[in-house]
Length: 70
View 1: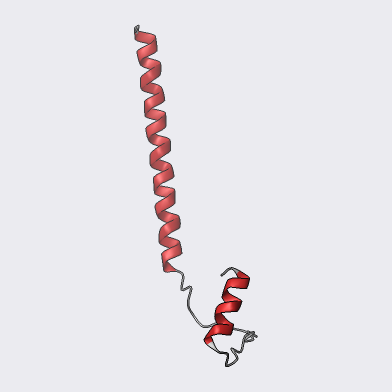
View 2: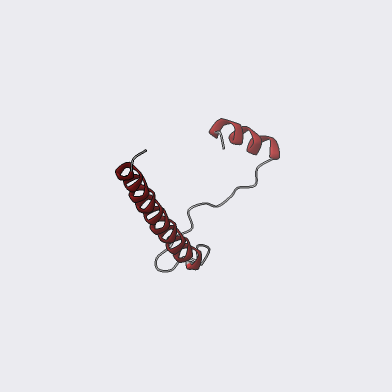
């Protein structure tokens, strides 16, 4: 390996390391912002409850569970 090839290899490794570090920091920032959001706050505004569970027997509920694939 001559000197110019070695120099090119070092350049590629440095650029790769810098890009990887920037990507890692960006992921950490996005993760920190996502952790601060409150996902389970009660809805605000004109939210409407869309489901009222009916009193069903467990066999009917199990049948619906299998039919819907949930």
